[in-house]
Image 1 (cartoon, helix red, strand yellow):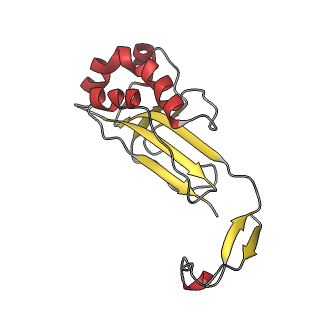
Image 2 (image 1 turned 180 degrees about the vertical axis):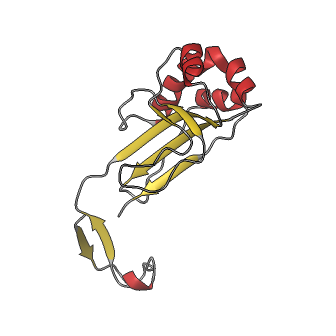
Image 3 (image 1 turned 60 degrees about the vertical axis):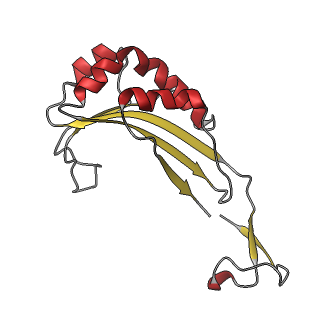
Amino acid sequence: MGAIVVWYHRAMSPPDDRDRGRVIYPTEPPWFAHSATLRIHGDALDFDEISRTLGVSPTHTHRRADRKGRRSEATYRDDAWHYSPAIPEERSLTDHLLALWMIVRPHVDYLVSLKERYTVDIFCGYGSNNQTAGFEVDHRCLEMFIALQVPFGVSVITLE
């Protein structure tokens, strides 16, 4: 990404020694991306049973020992069934979580029971090219994490 370098006034403290004496302003408009994914991992997952019970098709699956990519020698360590709602990434994390909660809510008991044999969690993602931006999550979204007894965490990626 291109950048415009602007010298700042001496009263401002530099972000680090490399950038001493300058502030970098991005030349492209800020963008924001959000995601929420129900993930179920373990050995010998029954993909069909999970899909049938939840009433949705997975957005990603893989089996243990599948290659991670066509050109990769690396393989997956376990089976995985993932579901992400079809929400544009530009929409808020709240929108993604509430759409996922609509799918998950009727099946909380089933998903909690899967935790006896498998790993069940919610993966949240946030990305932006704006390093000083943030996000908030509506309180209604937290009900899903409490019901599933899983931690609320967000993977944050910022690009310069």
